[in-house]
Picture 1: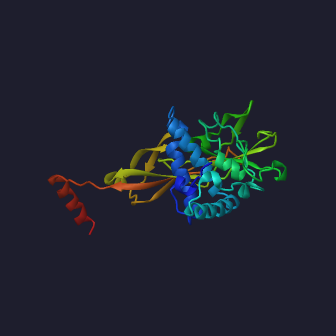
Picture 2: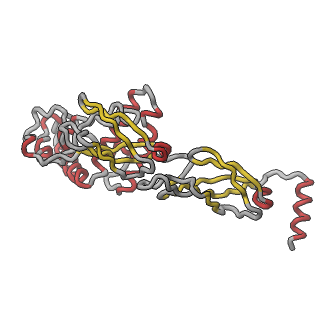
Picture 3: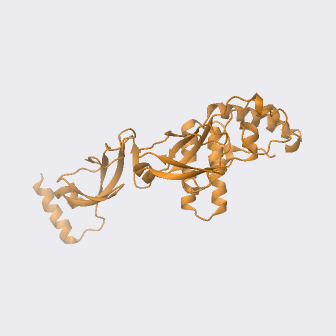
Length: 302
């Protein structure tokens, strides 16, 4: 069994903080998500690897254990040791018992399926033969938790997916308004019949920035619309709407559209707002007539 460098998988340093790890995970999960790479087996495997790395590095208990292992293994390798000769069992006994679940049909792809390395250190259904000290009877009752990435659109609408665990198929519903850290309990969804918890991570959306239940989006208008007022189309998460630009609108001025944000998690009928930040586009190449008219306007403003 080979050692896995989870820091390298996420592209972060070993001193990276929780926010940096979360940001790296979300960026990579968005890039390799099965919905965006349908039929690409390499992307699917990469997505699994990313989820596995985040499962460890986002959990302080797992991360501490993993860092201890990494230090010992690095020292062992520096003395010429080979993977097959390392005593993995000293780290598997009494490990934090996250378990392997088959997520092949969950949220558009195989986000589960932990490696032998993960299963040996943190528990799981992978083949554990030959790993000293791995006596399942010595473990505590397992806590099953799996990170799952969804799009902002899915977080807005909610939805239903099919989860396969062994020979069982379980329908999983995730609520409208789900956000980072939202946990979904799947009763009897784990391999041993205990509960499974899905921990939601909402991927970045190029159109919007989310803060709580509010969404933020930029819109660009020409200088004449900003000065004189007018109407522009702006995107919302469920279609475009007409927005009235008041005369004299300033650059970076914010205009709020009520009820066009994200649903409240516990009260999905209530929605946040869409906050539009106005960007003013200045003309670069003015005609002689335009320059003359603007000179007149400037002189009247004195």
